[in-house]
View 1 (cartoon, one colour):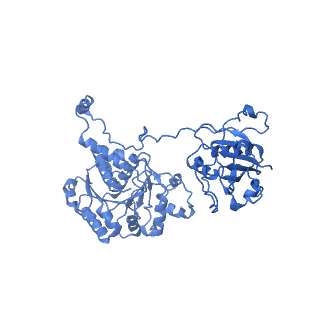
View 2 (cartoon, helix red, strand yellow):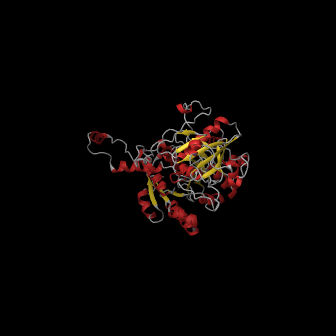
View 3 (cartoon, helix red, strand yellow):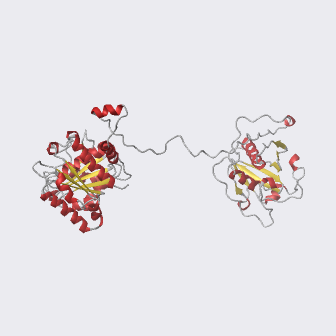
Length: 500
């Protein structure tokens, strides 16, 4: 294939003797290579190479263009370059063959460096080290070589996009010539300005507590700008925001007291209802009581009747492709309160459904793929393997108690035992929330007992007497408003102690 001739002297570019326009401010070497690539694309087939002899202020060297990829050979200085820009005829009698040593058909790898496509997104590779007698490479304005100049143009984000639209007609002086003239690029756009610092789009929003409308006569006055939400109403909305928080990893909340009748199951269910209703679901109550667990007795039951025992039996069949909906075969969804329950089987004794550490860990690994909060409704045996493993998987501890001396003493002993054990259990005890409930009107009021727990945990909160808490089916909407408010305070206290 015949070689073409490309000359670049100052701002004058010629391809096979035909002048190529160089827009003001453009890099003439970039324009030269663009024109050469356009010509190569027009006259060659896929896989064919087009050979071009290039002359500039530093000498003569070969370019080979194959499928849009440009390779340049070593620059050989010439004795004369005058007139090359106008004629395109070789000023060096050696020509491209003698300048590069290898044949044009197979350029030597040692003397060729890939420049990639000028339209490509990749950064060109650095050139091979030049010979000692090779001229120093400088910028194109000072007469530098085309390889260095083109690299500088890329670094400066020079205009190297493909020529848009059809090629324009040749100049009048060139109409008689058979070789088409390749159009220069559009004038280079001005440099982009730095973006403004501000934006009209909010990048971060934080919910601000909005108290419910004030009722009664105070509400009427508030409509006219008189008065407004009380501190109590503002505190209630702040507690709702705290409970509604969604953490970046699943959380486990252990509800524990070694004495039966201390309120563990009601506490577990009401906490789950709050976190699910305000935080958007994906909350589970894990009945971790292997002996007569009551969570299934006091909640809505699905038709399948499955328990944790069925989930354990199915674990070997899981391969990691399970979806959240698959858990519906084993859990019991609470329609109104929006949480799920993983029931134990109260008909069996503890020895018949005891879990070892590996089984407990496997269940928790599965559950935390689908639930953001797991509330453990624990049993009474603080030495049981599943009870101890529950502590390992918990991020918060809630200790419910009735106001009778035996329940309160059991709560104190639990905190003492965890503290004495040290490690994670001691940290849970230090950060625990104690909930003192008024289970019976015959017992002391919570406000009389709560102060005696001061210093044993992070917070001590009270729940008023409410007959709904003694029903067989425990639902959030059945609670009195003041009871709901008290439980909301408990939920917010727990949420404030959980870290992201």
